[in-house]
Length: 464
Image 1 (tube, rainbow, N blue to C red):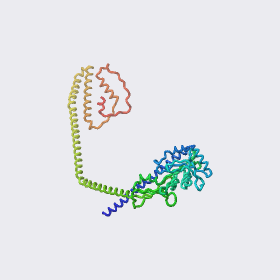
Image 2 (cartoon, helix red, strand yellow):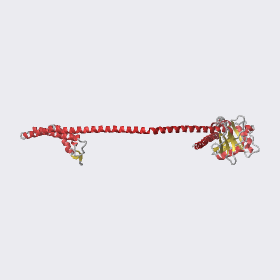
Image 3 (cartoon, rainbow, N blue to C red):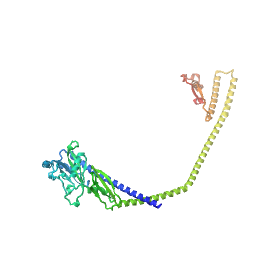
Image 4 (cartoon, rainbow, N blue to C red):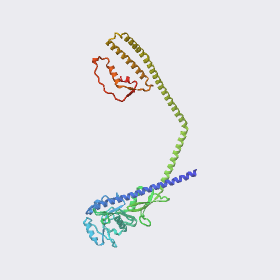
């Protein structure tokens, strides 16, 4: 088990180291690409502004290029405007640009004489020790190649690496491999094609300064980087190298590619012991933290298993108590319903006996009275007897309806046909029966709906 654990730990450690190197490499590639794009965008902005000038002067160029500085582009040596000239028009070109404000311009043709000169007629130098105004860049095949590619493609182009013309007079130990970024400048209002090219903007970039600016923040002391130009066939051309203060790690380097200004650069990233040791310490911490977490989880599992039965019994007791409480509540509700049924039954008995008994007696006495006075009954007495009989019948109907409502909960609905006209006439007659005939209002009737109407048998009481 120990051997398996050691082997697994070693594999995990190597995996963590590889992930650390991959992450650092990705960050380096992103930083180099982003920084290169920033230089390209700056050159494009200046090229657009220069091309927008109908009559470009030295003062215009100085104003346009003023924002370009070593603080923003630490690897840049300067920015120059280059124009082409046939060999026989050098003096004419010099007079023209002196009239445009470049009063100190002195064109120096390259030797041997090229097929076409490429003179620097305007320049803003970011390096106070060197100046290239008037230099014929045709002496640099790398720069000419980049300018031709930029003219043909219409895009910013990076040259192959070489020692810049301005640096060739410096001691060999101070010279850096560098490259130029070049962008075509077009005539005002012309389409961007080879015929309308007005000139080129050139920005010299020292490879070591460029790479140091980028990698001092990203690679730090964790990785060494070699930058190679692999755009052409053959072995890669060195561009720059970043050597951190840390000791290189003996493991293999990571090789990746990056595309900058139409050039394919290859970066070889070699980790240092600082990166590997940091990955190892993180692995140890991760293993320790994982072991602690596993121990805590196992202890928690033991506690859960030990107390699970008690918790289950407690939940059963709680559920039983809740069920008992629910049963008790339901029994109370049922008892209340039974009491209500008993009260309704008693009420129905009271109505059936205590109310009907005197009503029946009164009805009987009224019938005897009508028989006794039948022969001597006048209209007034007959009218009042009729009123009493109507009241008794009405009282009997009310008692029946009251009993029906008292027992309506358990009774089913019985629908019967209802004559609305007769029902209305009966109600009106009862309501007006106490008035004399001369006090009663005349009434009119409207035709009832032809379709039959059905209603519950107790509807009579609800209408009165």
